[in-house]
Length: 489
Image 1 (cartoon, rainbow, N blue to C red):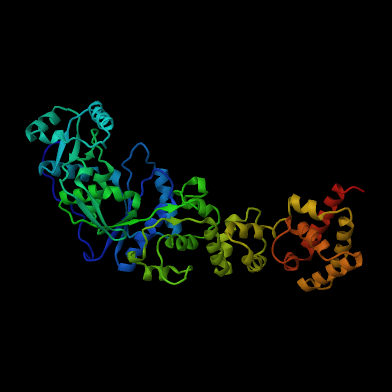
Image 2 (tube, helix red, strand yellow; image 1 turned 90 degrees about the vertical axis):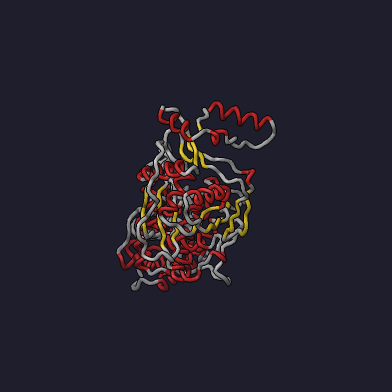
């Protein structure tokens, strides 16, 4: 890079320079992980609680791993979850001029310097450190190169990186969640800001952007805690205010290990596709580290925005329990208006939907027993299409040689009913069972299997009434024929 003084960084006039500004900055190298979603969610809640601004920045400078389709997935997942940002998205890949100008200014001010060591030379240094049993730190040898010589070698095309001139002092961070954290000088070295190919590294682009965007609070996962002293030094070098830091505890699986795919769904879109409602996942993620007080677990978005504070966020890891999420989702399913739940479940009704009035009645019948919109979609489809097959375990347990004859008798009794209600159909079944000299259960279980293809579900006679006479009798007789075909004479 040529040595010339660049203009000061500026993001333009702010509507209110006194309010907090926070950001979520995912890298498009994978789907939106639930850990990243929680980070975005806490930034959003903090901004809404304080009347601040929430920005979205896409950190896509890793040209080998960043992909546009993953950016689209992240944006889609955020929109679905309700993570609305106020400014952005800003793409780092479109801001190289800003990073180049910042690097040139740091070089001109002597706060950074060029280092010309080759990869082989650095690897030799690293091996010497390992052989001596000490952690590797860059020696800082290139600090001694005079500026004129550095300029000449750069103009001649000699490959080099740009390193920050780190201060020789302990860097102290007053973390809003973890309290005072100290980083001794001997643990820090002059790290690379710009690679030899001219691309800025993560630490540099992040701090330049946070400076230019006037970020006041950096709320992120504790895997970034070790990066913080580098960022503090960079903010000082850039002449920028240092944001307040808040590092969130990790999210673990139920085995207390870092959450990953081995624990099941780890991406937001996987839970969306599993029939989880966005309101439920939002609520669930909010409580992975934040305690609103009391024993409350179901909170509205307005309540979360009103009550959220970093003071109530713990530093300890949180456990992502899928069963707890399913329980919470069931609470939202139970309370959601029927017409809205119908709309949410329709995409999962693979075999179609019954008439709207039947579908709405089916929602009220099944909502106490389903946990996801997938389960509700399947329940709705069961009223639209006859069972294609029957649960094999249920068949083995409940279909006996006499079952076809008994169900034929039941079908005749049901067909003769003048009124088709849950009460009348139940009475007909119990009378048929009495006439056959068997318990009602001996008919209830195969009847449910005949009508729904399963042996569990909503109260049978409510289902019978909702299916209607024609459909119920057709399914019953179809089952009888299937049972005759498989039952020895």
